[in-house]
Structure formats: C-alpha cells, structure tokens
Image (cartoon, rainbow, N blue to C red):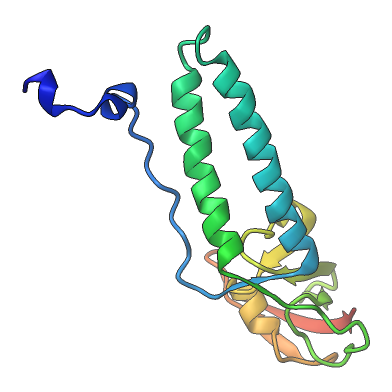
Length: 165
C-alpha cells in the first residue's frame, strides 16, 4: 500500500497491538476502599505514562509500555465510570452483606475470615473475595449460626458462620 494512504499516527503505533482488558458484565459494586484503590491506580498509571513519554526518545520499548499503560487506563476509566459505591453499614452484624467481614468455621473446626468486596478489590492473599465468587454467593444474605455449602472445584465444604463484622 502506498504511504499516501496511511495516517502518520498509524505508523507510530505499527506493531503495537495490545489486547483490551475484559470488563466484567456484572454490576461494578465497590467498597469505599475499593474506589480509592481504583483512583490510586489511575493516578499511578498517569504518572507512569508521563515517565514513559519522556523515555520514548531513548528507550525502544517505551512505545509498547505506553500502549499497555493506555490500555490499563481505559480499563480503569471504564471501571471508575461504572462504579457503584456501596457503603457497608457497620451496625449491621446480623446478616452477611456486601462489604461485610465474615468469620466461618469449616467441618474440621478451622476458622477463616473473608471480606466480601468488589471484583477489582478481590485478593485471596488478603482474604478479600469478590461478591460474585462461590464463597460470597453462599454467604450473602445468611446470618450467624447458618451453615452454608461452599461449592469448590476440589469438593464442596460445609461452613458455619460464626461472626459478622
């Protein structure tokens, strides 16, 4: 194809094909902390983008990094635009709701505590589980003393709710 039919901007991005991050079809419920995390990530990415723009002339991979940052910024912007802030009522300690910290006892007597959060805030290492996860679905709407079945790939487990914060 003749160069006459190619936009200059297209030439700049030739070879940079970064797939978009998928955006969940579920409602984007967020806790206040989850909203702050999204906002902080947007700020961090903006700062990183500015730094990469300055390196663009000297670092060959800067354009690729900028494309990835732009993709992540689009994702975060979409998540912020669709965020539905849900503030947990701290006085509600009888029913498991979004934002609650729930302690459960398994069949062997081991205690585990989970906090039910939005998809972007979920982090199993911190025991923060997404409200659409199997464990959260089993717990939401239940009360202290209720026994629920946690459907897991390695086998179902009975959990008894011992505390709600």
